[in-house]
Image (cartoon, rainbow, N blue to C red; front, side, top):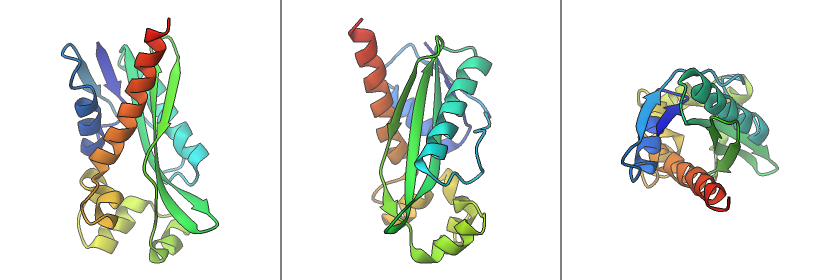
Length: 172
């Protein structure tokens, strides 16, 4: 099975590979697929659309059996801004499975630069005084004091996607 990943982000690629690790015959192809949404998705809907676009683009460009799209974003609630993350598994035939992951509130001091149009990645670099947080532990890793990494957060989403995909195949 050829699994095309709609990103080359190491945290996301690791999650996909780990999630599919029991599929011995899996081959992985990370690709730079544009999300087709804002650089910083600002709602569940936009974040889901980015994941679907990446998954769809990956399966088509990579000519794979499955395309995986993973997208992180923020979502406004009455309690403030929350970190959100979504994934999509798209089959060669065009069937789409969607799953979402962990949520947690973002510190209030991150809201102003986000509302001004900055991406969360560079904001987190400044906030945590680290480089390239988005490719490593992610905002979730910083905000959970390392208890949950970006890769493990997306691994949960991958498990949701694989489970739906397998269930769908099984019921036929």
